[in-house]
Structure formats: C-alpha cells, structure tokens
Image (cartoon, rainbow, N blue to C red):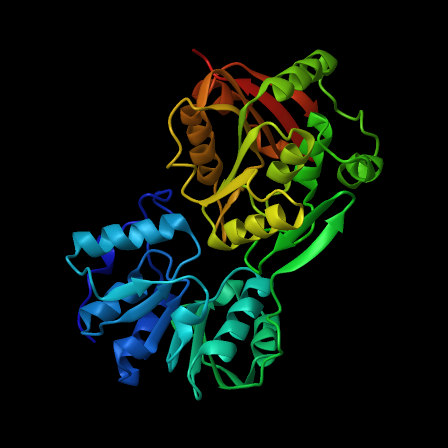
Length: 405
C-alpha cells in the first residue's frame, strides 16, 4: 500500500483539538480493503468518510471516479480542502444518499454511523440501488460497535461476517443483498399534537420531539395546545422546579420579541421542530431552518411540507448558517448538540454560539436550551451579550442572550 500522508489531513472547518483527529484506524482498514480488492474507482462508493481519509488515500493509490457521500457539511468542506492541500482534486464526486451514489457500485466502504436507524437506511439503500453482488464493508472502533449493528445489516444482506479486530477497529463484511421492500424504510413521521415531524435515519431523536426542544417550545409559548398538556412532565416533575427568579418578566419580553421578529433562524434545526412551530404560530415571519447534517436538512424539508409550510420555511444544509448574511436575523432558536461524533465535546455548541453572534443584529436575541450540567451562561455572555437564565431544572436550562451593539 502506498504511503499516504494521513497526518496532513485536517478537520477544518470542523472543530479541531488535540484529542480530535481527522482519521482513525478504521479509515486505514477500509482503505486497505478497497485497494486490495482491485476494484476500479468508478465501482467504489464511500459513505461516512468524515474528513476524506478513505477517499483521498484511494485516490493516492490510483483510483478515480470514486463516489462519496458525507452527511455533514463540515466533512464535505474538509474533504475539499484536504484534496486541494494534497493536490488530489478530481478523483471523486460528491452525492447524496441516493441512486446516483450507488448504481453500478460493486464495493461500498462505510464508516459505521452512530445511529442504528441511519445504518438501516444506508444498508437498505445499498441493497436497493447498488450492483448485483455488491459487497458492503463496514468498519468502526470496537468500543463503539454492538451486535445490534450486525442485526441491522442482516435485514438487508444474507451474509454478515464480522472480522477479527485490528488496531482497536473491526470490519464487518455484508454480501448477498436481500430483496428490498417496495418503499424504503425512511423517512418516517410522527404526530405531536398539531405538529408532525419527519425524520430520516441520521436525524437526531428520529421523529420524536426531544425533551430539550419540548422545553424550549414550552418556555417560548410556541407549543401547540396538545403539547402544552404534557410538555414539562417529560422533562421534570413540577414545571416550576428550579425556575429562575424573575423569569415572568423575561417571558413577557420573550412574547414581545417573538411578535416583533421578522427573520428567525432555527440553528442546528434537526427535524425542524422549532422552525415549524414558530412558522405555524407566526405566519408573517421569515423562518430559516439550517443544519450541517444532510439527513437533518432532508428531514426538516419533510417536516415543512407535511405541516403545510412549503414556501414559508426555508431549509438549508450548511455549516452553522455560514451562507446567511451577518447581522441579518432578529431571533435565533437553538438546542445545541454536545457530541462531536462519538466524542463529548463543547466545541459543537461553541461554534453555534459564535454563529448566532454573527447572524444576530444588535438587540437581536438568542434563545437556547441546554443540559444544565454544561453551564454555558458565561460563554454566551462573552460571545453574544447579556444573558439571562429564564428557566432551570436539574435537566435543562433555558437562557436568553441579547446581542450587544
């Protein structure tokens, strides 16, 4: 195998830190399998190549025409930048998780996703669209792998063979694709009172309304009546537990800013619950839902359509709203993640706080909900402006930050 300069790969524009690498041993094992297979590049599809380690190492080994799907906008940009830095452009094409990625593919190399639902959607897509006789080689770090992943793959493939672990990673070889159902298993939908959520496999929380989003909807008064009846019960017994002193005044201010907001962004929108609920309650506002996950953006588009909001809510697949103009937004709604892949890391939330600071006009407001143990208030004050605690329970804190002039 030719020597490939893995150490030169960067995660940028994703979060970079000493404990976060742009490649791992699984990338190396998948690349070695791809090279040893002798299969031409235009018959290889690569899925989940976070920063381009697999794609670019295969390109370096002489493969061309590789088809690539990355869920995250940050990963797509990192791959493009790494390719440019290594002068390896032109060896691959980017695709969504659809037939264009897989038709004619005889080998699919997959970095196992965190979610079993996402794995199910990928396995079905490979069995549905790839060439007869396709082999799916999936890999992951042993500490993150489960027997349930084998079971999911077995729904789409007759033969599923886990390999011996190497360098704390393991490959699973799936072959002999089974007949697929007439309709793909995703997207799925679920109704929550007057709001229906649509979700692809890679969307956080699936079609459920996650508890943090429910809490923020409650505090902002955006929950539909059916949601209000059960709202805080799932998050905390006793809605007044831990509520900040003087929050009634802040909530009065919330009502006024919500009524006055003309441009609203649901940042890191997931399935689009916040954006859809806001648009249903305030039909005159311009609402933008944005997420770096392609699965989330596709889910949010589905949510927009099923709730009759097509043309009223714009959904973008973007890195922290990077394509939106500075100081152009009145209100940002945010339920930030606290994971980067399988790592717990505050950098994901920080990037979104920084994005909110850039997007908000002076006097604009960020309303955010987060796990109470994370204590983001000081960081929000430093990045955006005066930050008040609106509500706090042992599980969740809601704050309002006003963009300084």
